[in-house]
Length: 404
Image (cartoon, rainbow, N blue to C red; front, side, top):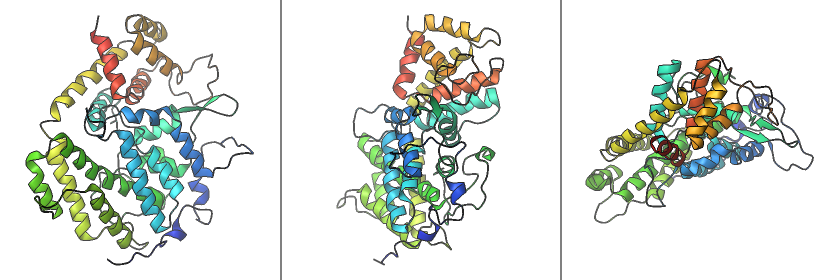
Protein backbone atom coordinates (compact mmCIF):
# COMPACT_ATOMS: atom_id res chain seq x y z
CA UNK A 1 0.00 0.00 0.00
CA UNK A 2 1.36 3.43 -1.00
CA UNK A 3 2.16 5.71 1.93
CA UNK A 4 -0.02 8.83 2.32
CA UNK A 5 1.59 12.24 2.61
CA UNK A 6 -0.08 13.65 5.73
CA UNK A 7 -0.91 17.32 6.19
CA UNK A 8 -0.77 18.20 2.48
CA UNK A 9 -3.75 20.60 2.78
CA UNK A 10 -2.58 22.24 6.00
CA UNK A 11 -1.81 25.64 4.50
CA UNK A 12 -5.31 25.78 2.98
CA UNK A 13 -7.17 24.90 6.19
CA UNK A 14 -9.59 27.22 8.00
CA UNK A 15 -7.18 29.01 10.34
CA UNK A 16 -6.14 32.64 10.98
CA UNK A 17 -3.48 32.44 8.26
CA UNK A 18 -6.10 31.66 5.62
CA UNK A 19 -6.72 34.81 3.50
CA UNK A 20 -10.47 34.16 3.75
CA UNK A 21 -10.40 33.81 7.55
CA UNK A 22 -12.51 36.86 8.34
CA UNK A 23 -15.19 35.67 5.91
CA UNK A 24 -14.99 32.12 7.26
CA UNK A 25 -15.62 33.15 10.88
CA UNK A 26 -18.06 35.99 10.16
CA UNK A 27 -21.46 35.95 11.86
CA UNK A 28 -24.62 37.94 11.16
CA UNK A 29 -24.13 39.69 14.51
CA UNK A 30 -21.46 39.54 17.22
CA UNK A 31 -21.86 36.58 19.57
CA UNK A 32 -21.83 37.30 23.27
CA UNK A 33 -18.55 36.55 25.03
CA UNK A 34 -17.63 35.09 28.42
CA UNK A 35 -14.30 35.75 30.12
CA UNK A 36 -14.24 32.08 31.15
CA UNK A 37 -15.02 30.52 27.75
CA UNK A 38 -12.35 28.00 26.73
CA UNK A 39 -13.72 27.16 23.27
CA UNK A 40 -12.55 28.41 19.90
CA UNK A 41 -14.89 29.91 17.32
CA UNK A 42 -15.98 26.61 15.76
CA UNK A 43 -16.23 24.80 19.08
CA UNK A 44 -18.81 27.39 20.07
CA UNK A 45 -20.79 26.59 16.93
CA UNK A 46 -20.42 22.89 17.67
CA UNK A 47 -21.93 23.15 21.15
CA UNK A 48 -24.68 25.51 19.99
CA UNK A 49 -25.72 22.86 17.48
CA UNK A 50 -25.40 20.09 20.05
CA UNK A 51 -27.80 21.91 22.41
CA UNK A 52 -30.39 22.65 19.72
CA UNK A 53 -33.75 20.88 19.78
CA UNK A 54 -33.38 19.99 16.09
CA UNK A 55 -30.25 17.99 16.87
CA UNK A 56 -31.91 16.12 19.74
CA UNK A 57 -34.81 15.12 17.52
CA UNK A 58 -32.55 13.41 14.98
CA UNK A 59 -32.52 10.29 17.16
CA UNK A 60 -36.21 9.78 16.30
CA UNK A 61 -36.02 10.58 12.58
CA UNK A 62 -35.83 8.00 9.80
CA UNK A 63 -32.57 7.49 7.95
CA UNK A 64 -33.91 4.87 5.49
CA UNK A 65 -35.93 2.33 7.47
CA UNK A 66 -38.97 3.55 9.37
CA UNK A 67 -39.58 2.58 13.01
CA UNK A 68 -37.39 -0.53 13.04
CA UNK A 69 -37.82 -3.14 15.76
CA UNK A 70 -34.05 -3.65 15.74
CA UNK A 71 -32.39 -1.00 17.94
CA UNK A 72 -29.23 -1.24 15.86
CA UNK A 73 -30.77 0.06 12.63
CA UNK A 74 -29.40 3.49 11.76
CA UNK A 75 -31.44 6.58 12.56
CA UNK A 76 -30.66 10.09 11.39
CA UNK A 77 -28.57 10.96 14.46
CA UNK A 78 -26.34 7.92 13.98
CA UNK A 79 -25.79 8.88 10.35
CA UNK A 80 -24.73 12.35 11.49
CA UNK A 81 -22.19 10.84 13.88
CA UNK A 82 -20.87 8.56 11.11
CA UNK A 83 -20.33 11.61 8.89
CA UNK A 84 -18.60 13.42 11.76
CA UNK A 85 -16.28 10.45 12.30
CA UNK A 86 -15.39 10.01 8.63
CA UNK A 87 -14.95 13.78 8.20
CA UNK A 88 -12.62 13.93 11.20
CA UNK A 89 -10.41 11.15 9.84
CA UNK A 90 -10.11 12.74 6.40
CA UNK A 91 -9.54 16.27 7.73
CA UNK A 92 -7.00 15.08 10.27
CA UNK A 93 -4.93 13.23 7.65
CA UNK A 94 -5.06 16.11 5.18
CA UNK A 95 -4.20 18.75 7.80
CA UNK A 96 -7.55 20.55 7.74
CA UNK A 97 -9.53 22.02 10.65
CA UNK A 98 -11.18 19.05 12.38
CA UNK A 99 -13.22 21.28 14.69
CA UNK A 100 -14.85 22.96 11.71
CA UNK A 101 -15.58 19.65 9.97
CA UNK A 102 -17.16 18.33 13.16
CA UNK A 103 -19.44 21.37 13.50
CA UNK A 104 -20.54 21.14 9.86
CA UNK A 105 -21.13 17.40 10.16
CA UNK A 106 -23.12 17.84 13.37
CA UNK A 107 -25.43 20.37 11.72
CA UNK A 108 -25.55 19.07 8.17
CA UNK A 109 -28.88 17.19 8.44
CA UNK A 110 -30.81 19.41 10.87
CA UNK A 111 -33.17 20.34 8.03
CA UNK A 112 -34.40 16.79 7.44
CA UNK A 113 -38.13 16.22 7.76
CA UNK A 114 -39.72 13.27 9.52
CA UNK A 115 -39.71 10.05 7.47
CA UNK A 116 -36.41 10.76 5.69
CA UNK A 117 -36.25 11.57 1.99
CA UNK A 118 -39.82 10.35 1.50
CA UNK A 119 -41.02 13.03 3.92
CA UNK A 120 -38.83 15.59 2.17
CA UNK A 121 -40.51 14.86 -1.17
CA UNK A 122 -43.97 15.12 0.38
CA UNK A 123 -43.25 18.50 1.99
CA UNK A 124 -41.74 19.67 -1.29
CA UNK A 125 -45.01 18.90 -3.08
CA UNK A 126 -46.88 21.10 -0.57
CA UNK A 127 -44.30 23.86 -0.94
CA UNK A 128 -44.39 23.80 -4.74
CA UNK A 129 -48.18 23.95 -4.75
CA UNK A 130 -48.60 26.71 -2.16
CA UNK A 131 -45.35 28.70 -2.38
CA UNK A 132 -44.00 27.92 -5.82
CA UNK A 133 -40.62 26.77 -4.51
CA UNK A 134 -39.32 23.29 -3.61
CA UNK A 135 -38.57 22.13 -0.09
CA UNK A 136 -35.08 20.64 0.21
CA UNK A 137 -33.39 19.69 3.43
CA UNK A 138 -30.09 21.50 2.84
CA UNK A 139 -31.89 24.85 2.50
CA UNK A 140 -34.25 23.99 5.34
CA UNK A 141 -31.22 23.17 7.47
CA UNK A 142 -29.76 26.62 6.84
CA UNK A 143 -33.11 28.21 7.68
CA UNK A 144 -33.25 26.23 10.92
CA UNK A 145 -29.83 27.32 12.14
CA UNK A 146 -30.40 30.89 10.94
CA UNK A 147 -33.97 31.49 12.09
CA UNK A 148 -35.81 28.59 13.75
CA UNK A 149 -33.52 27.16 16.41
CA UNK A 150 -33.30 29.36 19.51
CA UNK A 151 -30.94 29.27 22.50
CA UNK A 152 -30.92 31.34 25.65
CA UNK A 153 -28.01 33.75 25.84
CA UNK A 154 -26.08 34.60 29.01
CA UNK A 155 -28.86 37.02 30.05
CA UNK A 156 -31.72 34.56 29.55
CA UNK A 157 -32.99 35.89 26.21
CA UNK A 158 -33.77 33.46 23.39
CA UNK A 159 -31.68 34.27 20.35
CA UNK A 160 -30.96 32.71 16.95
CA UNK A 161 -27.97 30.35 16.82
CA UNK A 162 -25.91 32.89 14.85
CA UNK A 163 -23.33 30.44 13.51
CA UNK A 164 -20.22 31.27 11.54
CA UNK A 165 -20.41 31.58 7.77
CA UNK A 166 -18.25 28.48 7.25
CA UNK A 167 -20.62 26.22 9.22
CA UNK A 168 -23.74 27.71 7.65
CA UNK A 169 -22.18 27.32 4.20
CA UNK A 170 -21.19 23.73 4.95
CA UNK A 171 -24.77 22.89 5.89
CA UNK A 172 -26.40 24.19 2.72
CA UNK A 173 -23.52 22.98 0.52
CA UNK A 174 -23.30 19.42 1.85
CA UNK A 175 -25.43 17.61 -0.76
CA UNK A 176 -24.00 14.09 -0.93
CA UNK A 177 -25.93 13.17 -4.09
CA UNK A 178 -22.81 13.67 -6.16
CA UNK A 179 -21.13 11.52 -8.78
CA UNK A 180 -18.31 13.88 -9.69
CA UNK A 181 -14.69 13.78 -8.61
CA UNK A 182 -12.15 16.58 -8.03
CA UNK A 183 -14.25 18.48 -5.50
CA UNK A 184 -12.74 21.78 -4.43
CA UNK A 185 -14.08 24.92 -2.72
CA UNK A 186 -15.45 27.89 -4.58
CA UNK A 187 -13.69 31.25 -4.48
CA UNK A 188 -16.69 33.52 -4.09
CA UNK A 189 -17.97 34.72 -0.71
CA UNK A 190 -21.63 34.61 -1.71
CA UNK A 191 -24.84 35.44 0.07
CA UNK A 192 -26.14 31.98 0.98
CA UNK A 193 -29.66 33.18 0.14
CA UNK A 194 -28.55 32.91 -3.51
CA UNK A 195 -28.90 29.12 -3.33
CA UNK A 196 -32.00 27.94 -5.19
CA UNK A 197 -31.30 24.20 -5.55
CA UNK A 198 -29.04 21.53 -3.99
CA UNK A 199 -25.44 21.26 -5.15
CA UNK A 200 -25.69 24.64 -6.91
CA UNK A 201 -22.37 25.83 -5.48
CA UNK A 202 -19.30 24.11 -4.09
CA UNK A 203 -18.61 24.71 -0.38
CA UNK A 204 -16.55 27.76 0.58
CA UNK A 205 -13.97 25.77 2.57
CA UNK A 206 -12.00 22.58 2.08
CA UNK A 207 -13.58 21.40 5.33
CA UNK A 208 -17.03 21.80 3.79
CA UNK A 209 -15.87 19.73 0.82
CA UNK A 210 -14.70 16.99 3.18
CA UNK A 211 -18.13 16.75 4.82
CA UNK A 212 -19.77 16.65 1.40
CA UNK A 213 -17.70 13.60 0.40
CA UNK A 214 -17.98 11.98 3.85
CA UNK A 215 -21.77 12.19 3.65
CA UNK A 216 -21.79 10.02 0.55
CA UNK A 217 -19.29 7.49 1.91
CA UNK A 218 -21.36 7.18 5.06
CA UNK A 219 -24.86 6.76 3.75
CA UNK A 220 -24.33 4.43 0.79
CA UNK A 221 -22.47 1.87 2.87
CA UNK A 222 -24.42 2.00 6.12
CA UNK A 223 -27.71 1.76 4.23
CA UNK A 224 -26.50 -1.56 2.76
CA UNK A 225 -25.64 -2.87 6.21
CA UNK A 226 -29.13 -2.03 7.49
CA UNK A 227 -30.82 -3.45 4.39
CA UNK A 228 -29.05 -6.78 4.93
CA UNK A 229 -30.12 -6.78 8.58
CA UNK A 230 -33.81 -6.31 7.74
CA UNK A 231 -33.68 -8.82 4.89
CA UNK A 232 -34.35 -6.53 1.94
CA UNK A 233 -31.24 -7.67 0.07
CA UNK A 234 -31.61 -11.43 0.50
CA UNK A 235 -32.16 -11.97 -3.23
CA UNK A 236 -29.47 -9.45 -4.25
CA UNK A 237 -26.51 -10.56 -2.12
CA UNK A 238 -24.70 -12.32 -4.97
CA UNK A 239 -24.90 -9.12 -7.05
CA UNK A 240 -23.62 -7.07 -4.14
CA UNK A 241 -20.75 -9.43 -3.37
CA UNK A 242 -19.76 -9.51 -7.03
CA UNK A 243 -19.77 -5.71 -7.08
CA UNK A 244 -17.47 -5.61 -4.05
CA UNK A 245 -15.24 -8.41 -5.36
CA UNK A 246 -16.12 -10.79 -2.51
CA UNK A 247 -16.84 -14.51 -2.45
CA UNK A 248 -20.33 -15.09 -1.04
CA UNK A 249 -19.31 -18.39 0.58
CA UNK A 250 -16.01 -17.34 2.11
CA UNK A 251 -16.46 -13.70 3.07
CA UNK A 252 -18.72 -11.64 5.28
CA UNK A 253 -19.41 -8.10 4.14
CA UNK A 254 -17.49 -5.81 6.49
CA UNK A 255 -18.77 -2.27 6.17
CA UNK A 256 -15.82 -0.77 8.03
CA UNK A 257 -13.30 -2.35 5.65
CA UNK A 258 -14.98 -0.79 2.61
CA UNK A 259 -15.21 2.61 4.33
CA UNK A 260 -11.56 2.43 5.38
CA UNK A 261 -10.44 1.60 1.84
CA UNK A 262 -12.43 4.50 0.38
CA UNK A 263 -11.07 6.96 2.96
CA UNK A 264 -7.51 5.81 2.32
CA UNK A 265 -7.99 6.07 -1.44
CA UNK A 266 -9.42 9.59 -1.11
CA UNK A 267 -6.63 10.81 1.16
CA UNK A 268 -3.96 9.30 -1.07
CA UNK A 269 -5.29 10.71 -4.36
CA UNK A 270 -6.42 14.16 -3.20
CA UNK A 271 -4.24 17.20 -3.74
CA UNK A 272 -4.65 20.96 -3.97
CA UNK A 273 -4.30 20.75 -7.75
CA UNK A 274 -6.79 17.89 -8.22
CA UNK A 275 -9.14 18.61 -5.34
CA UNK A 276 -10.69 15.90 -3.18
CA UNK A 277 -10.72 12.90 -5.46
CA UNK A 278 -10.85 9.13 -5.53
CA UNK A 279 -9.01 6.94 -7.96
CA UNK A 280 -11.13 6.13 -11.00
CA UNK A 281 -11.58 2.58 -9.69
CA UNK A 282 -12.87 3.71 -6.27
CA UNK A 283 -15.10 6.42 -7.72
CA UNK A 284 -16.66 3.89 -10.08
CA UNK A 285 -17.19 1.47 -7.20
CA UNK A 286 -18.79 4.12 -5.00
CA UNK A 287 -21.16 5.20 -7.76
CA UNK A 288 -22.02 1.59 -8.56
CA UNK A 289 -22.85 0.98 -4.90
CA UNK A 290 -25.06 4.08 -4.92
CA UNK A 291 -26.84 2.84 -8.06
CA UNK A 292 -27.28 -0.59 -6.44
CA UNK A 293 -28.87 1.06 -3.40
CA UNK A 294 -31.38 3.01 -5.47
CA UNK A 295 -32.45 -0.08 -7.38
CA UNK A 296 -32.63 -2.51 -4.51
CA UNK A 297 -33.18 -0.46 -1.33
CA UNK A 298 -34.62 3.04 -1.83
CA UNK A 299 -37.05 1.93 -4.58
CA UNK A 300 -37.67 -1.50 -3.05
CA UNK A 301 -41.23 -2.81 -2.89
CA UNK A 302 -40.72 -3.19 0.86
CA UNK A 303 -40.24 0.57 1.22
CA UNK A 304 -43.27 1.75 -0.79
CA UNK A 305 -46.11 0.95 1.69
CA UNK A 306 -44.53 3.08 4.40
CA UNK A 307 -43.99 5.92 1.90
CA UNK A 308 -47.71 5.92 1.09
CA UNK A 309 -48.49 6.01 4.81
CA UNK A 310 -46.15 8.98 5.31
CA UNK A 311 -48.03 10.91 2.63
CA UNK A 312 -51.33 10.37 4.40
CA UNK A 313 -49.89 11.42 7.78
CA UNK A 314 -48.19 14.60 6.57
CA UNK A 315 -51.07 15.59 4.28
CA UNK A 316 -53.59 15.44 7.10
CA UNK A 317 -51.40 17.48 9.44
CA UNK A 318 -50.61 20.12 6.82
CA UNK A 319 -54.21 20.40 5.58
CA UNK A 320 -55.66 20.75 9.08
CA UNK A 321 -53.20 23.46 10.11
CA UNK A 322 -53.64 25.33 6.85
CA UNK A 323 -57.44 25.37 7.36
CA UNK A 324 -56.92 27.61 10.39
CA UNK A 325 -55.59 30.48 8.30
CA UNK A 326 -57.39 33.81 8.42
CA UNK A 327 -55.90 37.21 7.79
CA UNK A 328 -57.98 38.66 10.64
CA UNK A 329 -58.58 35.80 13.09
CA UNK A 330 -55.49 33.61 12.98
CA UNK A 331 -54.86 33.38 16.72
CA UNK A 332 -58.54 32.78 17.64
CA UNK A 333 -58.74 30.10 14.95
CA UNK A 334 -55.63 28.39 16.27
CA UNK A 335 -56.98 28.56 19.82
CA UNK A 336 -60.15 26.78 18.62
CA UNK A 337 -57.92 24.17 17.03
CA UNK A 338 -56.31 23.67 20.44
CA UNK A 339 -59.69 22.79 21.91
CA UNK A 340 -60.29 19.97 19.42
CA UNK A 341 -56.69 18.84 18.87
CA UNK A 342 -54.79 19.94 21.99
CA UNK A 343 -51.54 18.09 21.28
CA UNK A 344 -51.18 19.45 17.75
CA UNK A 345 -52.87 22.81 18.31
CA UNK A 346 -50.93 23.88 21.41
CA UNK A 347 -47.63 22.70 19.98
CA UNK A 348 -48.12 24.62 16.73
CA UNK A 349 -49.45 27.74 18.44
CA UNK A 350 -46.43 27.88 20.73
CA UNK A 351 -44.13 27.38 17.74
CA UNK A 352 -45.80 30.03 15.56
CA UNK A 353 -45.80 32.73 18.24
CA UNK A 354 -42.01 32.56 18.39
CA UNK A 355 -41.69 33.83 14.80
CA UNK A 356 -44.70 36.07 14.22
CA UNK A 357 -44.84 39.81 14.71
CA UNK A 358 -46.58 40.05 18.08
CA UNK A 359 -46.40 42.76 20.72
CA UNK A 360 -45.46 40.85 23.85
CA UNK A 361 -42.44 38.73 22.98
CA UNK A 362 -41.30 38.01 26.53
CA UNK A 363 -37.71 36.78 26.48
CA UNK A 364 -37.65 36.36 22.69
CA UNK A 365 -35.00 38.38 20.84
CA UNK A 366 -34.86 36.30 17.67
CA UNK A 367 -35.62 37.42 14.13
CA UNK A 368 -39.36 37.74 13.43
CA UNK A 369 -40.20 35.93 10.20
CA UNK A 370 -43.92 36.20 9.52
CA UNK A 371 -46.72 38.77 9.16
CA UNK A 372 -50.29 37.91 10.18
CA UNK A 373 -51.91 39.03 6.94
CA UNK A 374 -49.74 36.91 4.65
CA UNK A 375 -51.03 33.44 3.76
CA UNK A 376 -47.73 32.40 2.19
CA UNK A 377 -46.01 33.19 5.49
CA UNK A 378 -48.45 30.90 7.26
CA UNK A 379 -47.80 28.05 4.83
CA UNK A 380 -44.06 28.48 5.31
CA UNK A 381 -44.57 28.45 9.08
CA UNK A 382 -46.42 25.12 8.81
CA UNK A 383 -43.63 23.64 6.68
CA UNK A 384 -40.99 24.66 9.21
CA UNK A 385 -43.10 23.23 12.02
CA UNK A 386 -43.73 19.87 10.35
CA UNK A 387 -40.14 19.54 9.15
CA UNK A 388 -38.99 19.83 12.75
CA UNK A 389 -41.14 16.91 13.92
CA UNK A 390 -39.82 13.50 14.80
CA UNK A 391 -41.43 10.47 13.16
CA UNK A 392 -43.06 9.59 16.48
CA UNK A 393 -44.57 13.01 17.05
CA UNK A 394 -45.95 13.23 13.50
CA UNK A 395 -47.72 9.90 13.97
CA UNK A 396 -48.93 10.90 17.42
CA UNK A 397 -50.65 14.06 16.18
CA UNK A 398 -52.01 12.21 13.14
CA UNK A 399 -53.61 9.71 15.52
CA UNK A 400 -55.08 12.66 17.40
CA UNK A 401 -56.56 14.01 14.16
CA UNK A 402 -58.26 10.77 13.20
CA UNK A 403 -59.27 9.78 16.75
CA UNK A 404 -62.39 10.64 18.72
